[in-house]
Image 1 (tube, rainbow, N blue to C red):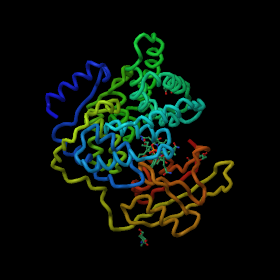
Image 2 (image 1 turned 180 degrees about the vertical axis):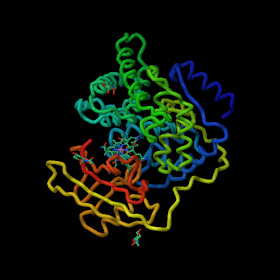
Image 3 (image 1 turned 135 degrees about the vertical axis):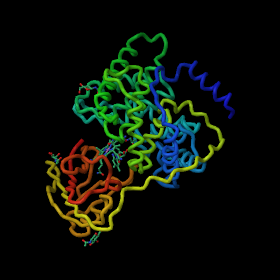
Image 4 (image 1 turned 90 degrees about the vertical axis):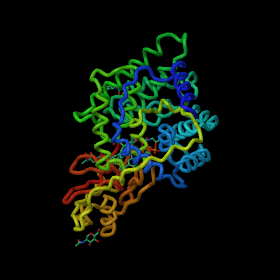
Length: 417
Ligand code: B12
Ligand SMILES: *[C@@H]1O[C@H](CO)[C@@H](O)[C@H](O)[C@H]1NC(C)=O
Ligand SMILES: *[C@@H]1O[C@H](CO)[C@@H](O)[C@H](O)[C@H]1NC(C)=O
Ligand SMILES: *[C@@H]1O[C@H](CO)[C@@H](O)[C@H](O)[C@H]1NC(C)=O
């Protein structure tokens, strides 16, 4: 594809009015570019033939232009072959966006998602805000395919979100902003002001809540919600009261990348579009060509923290005090592991020493998640899960990534969301 054609295409989108109006974006400084290329290569090279093809990775690589054509094709074929019946609403939505970004047909998957969402029951106002994350993805995917039939679904979604009284969640708010911005941009002409009024009102409320979570260093929520939040703040038609400094957020994110905070492929998939000035709203506009991108010259990949040869001691407590769950227990153990080990090694060592610490994991897009401890298992219907805390503060990372320090007290607490 020639530059002229690309130029013309990008102007056609602008004319069609489908791209966002105001876009406050900022870009990665030239000399930091190798860092970003390194992340992309790390993410793309994580793609193997597996039973867990990750649609978020395909979306990210198609948005920014893949280097690894083989990975792109493999992931596309695996997602084409995935069975609708095996997917949750959120996974189906990501699958549709991923296939759209690879210019593949999504007809039957879109109809299935549409049917699912027509039956969607809004969560109770007191239910945790994360309950809106998957339906947010669904509204976004459906909006990109068929905005008119999505309108009633989006109205129900927007009203329920506004009525929710539980603590705000940045990642969920970001996805909802992308979904409702898509709807806002596609309100049919002649349908009156009511849709515009509703969507802009809800968008204003969400982006204000997002902006209240911008910390002094520019991180939005935590480091792993910042990528999606950047996408949201760069497309929203409603500006938050507290102004967002994109440059500052970008600088801090680049520092965190340098610190090795983005090793998990899924974490890269959620930050990469923002580093390249793209958002999920660009998914329908990806130009599919077989032109191979030239592999950039790579920096030395970020190495994880130093591993000390000597052992450290970690205090590990497992606790289930949830009423209505048969077996109540609380047990603490001190285990010795090699310094620099991930938390998973602590869990394995504890399990080896005492059966109370027996645990199981399930594979997810973010890696292994601890699904059960001492035979008490998470349950989606009861909204229960094993939460991990360090000295009372919830961890921001999973057990396969988090590296405990000497004498740290880790608690696994069975609780509800
Ligand atoms: C919903 C949610 C949960 C729910 C999931 C269950 C459910 N039925 O909804 C619950 C509350 C159980 C949960 C738990 C945790 N979560 Co969570 N979660 C999310 C959230 C908001 C949305 C996920 C989603 O619905 N995706 C859409 C669907 C379609 O994709 P999916 O791949 O099928 O989703 C599954 C996985 O995301 C998985 N999952 C959710 N959280 C986590 C965390 C880890 C470490 C792993 C391995 C898997 C995993 O559960 C989802 C449903 O099955 C994301 C935000 C985000 N940006 O992704 C955070 C997020 C993924 N969670 C996060 C974290 C840190 C955790 C916890 C480690 C928190 C803690 N201190 O205990 C625990 C996991 C502990 C354990 N037992 O191993 C981080 C991960 C960051 C990282 N670098 O690893 C995120 C990005 C939030 C953030 N910004 O901090 N989470
Ligand atoms: C934003 O936060 C306020 C105050 O916490 C809350 O009342 C409101 O419902 C939130 N809005 C959304 C859309 O989450
Ligand atoms: C050091 O940790 C390992 C587990 O990583 C353990 O097998 C070993 O016994 C520990 N050594 C000491 C001296 O505690
Ligand atoms: C552990 O979970 C219980 C049940 O939800 C809760 O009451 C308690 O406050 C939690 N403890 C910690 C340390 O978070």
